[in-house]
Length: 113
Length: 113
Image (cartoon, rainbow over all chains, first blue to last red):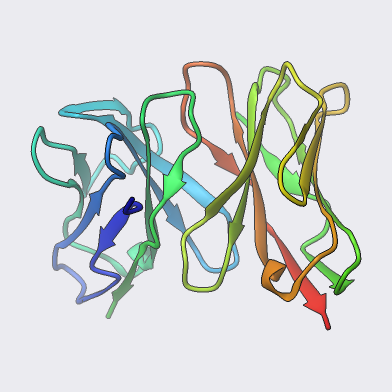
């Protein structure tokens, strides 16, 4: 039973470019969560999605960041016009429904040159 | 909002001894608590969870204790092994229906052979 799959594992972008991070949840999981982690820190919640719906985006910056979880295909976290401060590890988690443990992928490490 | 802290950023334990990792939270309405283990370069791995209607839960070699009176959570690992070396995070859900987890900053556990 495959776990949460994230790709790419590493992504390098220049300032001003766009970054697209993909997350395929565990089989049977329809709830997806995105978190950001800076070095030596805990994870910070960004957004919670169910299929085709954003449930809670209270942790996501209002500008440049967007997330989607289409009916078909992976969830996408999109960062437009990246800046140095966007450098971090971005983790995706999934659960079969709410009120269940969130299971994490191994993250995408985003580096901004 | 919720804030979650850990009592010690690092902990070194002799192989075979028991480890105790502590966590404090601030929101008395928090109702769901999870411990994760994170190894270098990987995502958080679910260890054990506990809900607010319980004060103790046991898994394989791990026990979680919840003291709601003082808003304190602990993870006990019995007979620690080299593979237990990692950063341990507690994560707290603010209230039922709100699925965003607040993570502590983590405790780095090192097992001394």
